[in-house]
Length: 335
Image 1 (cartoon, helix red, strand yellow):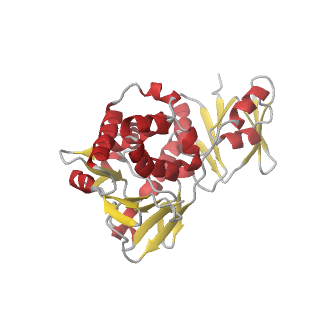
Image 2 (cartoon, one colour; image 1 turned 120 degrees about the vertical axis):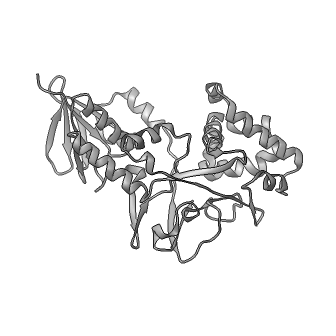
Image 3 (cartoon, one colour; image 1 turned 90 degrees about the horizontal axis):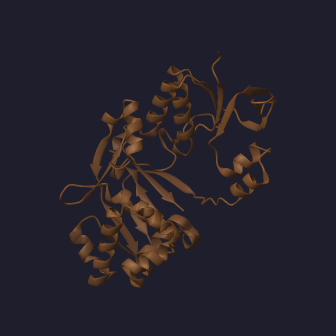
């Protein structure tokens, strides 16, 4: 009996992982990616003579699925862990919020507000039944635990920086997930943030993943956009490519965003199209800069001052040694 032929559309981490798992189950897998390289949103680019991640990424101790994949790729042992510092820019002033002492010295909030903020973070980090939060607006939940002052001065600016005005439609499960992940990054008695990275960044991870896919027999077709996916003969799927050719498979999976799925799959039912049309996406612009010298010793500086056009300053070289970037400092400016 011939092996089932599968087409995976999209060469991000979801597509690559699915292609690997199907190949391990004995399927014949072809992975199509329109971009000239694999990786998707975790992909890399060249900035001057430096190759690094297009967007900023770190690995946390709580990232169990990512660390499991890195272990499978024989890369987990190469993770370098470092303690980082956090800045907070508010009311045109820059503060360090990297230790408990600095937190209690933070002049923007009263002692009661600080205690409520700390209690909110501690409660969220220990909350297990997060599903009950999906029906509660995030600001409503935060006001209950942190109080209106903390929400206005801290939480709302941070939510707006991450989600824009869509934070008003976001459930409390979002802030729970963010707090739980970041809290797990705090190791040791001093509870300092510990972040990790693989030397050479995601370029090394993606290359190792591509090598593993090749050994598993997956055919990776990068630089090959798909035009449409339609039903062919009974039980068969037609994949029409951008160059005018067509290939036939037993099954296909599209791992791209909902608007792309709508464009690729004209035979979707009205119900399916309506569901995909109702999925909202939050766009982001993230500039990268290579500077001769560091801006600060903070890995992340959260910016709540709306007069500043970007929402944070991410100084990757507060985590990754500058020799990885030719002695320069790599900065990300998400907007």
